[in-house]
Length: 136
Image 1 (cartoon, rainbow, N blue to C red):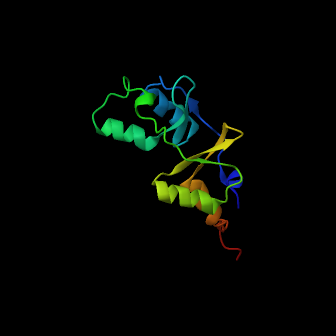
Image 2: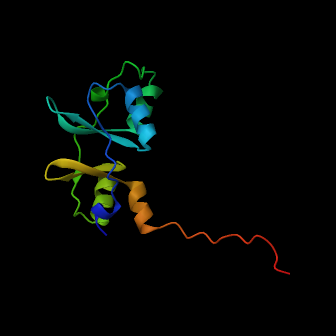
Image 3: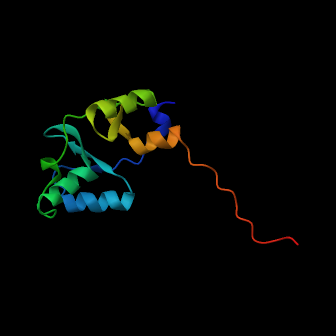
């Protein structure tokens, strides 16, 4: 199975000047664990994850004054849609991260997470409808 089969195409994109609170609110509303940070005047494409926000708050930093650029990972490993899930999982395990930005022709087209890979490798069992009573 390939990354394109597992990735989420819901890509939340923010700018480096977004506050961590704004980023967290957008991530929560879209139910995603990471945002792509586009900084055309600086580092290019980076990623801000829920863990980055949690670490900042845990350090006592104010999410209303801390900006995404200060917490963005810019040394990013990118996947392509044609990577296998094994390649993506190896990159994540080797780098110690849980999300990969998927680039297609230099543009972010998706994000694949550990959860996406697990969902493909171990799909949830089908639920059996409960019986409503006896037929006697």
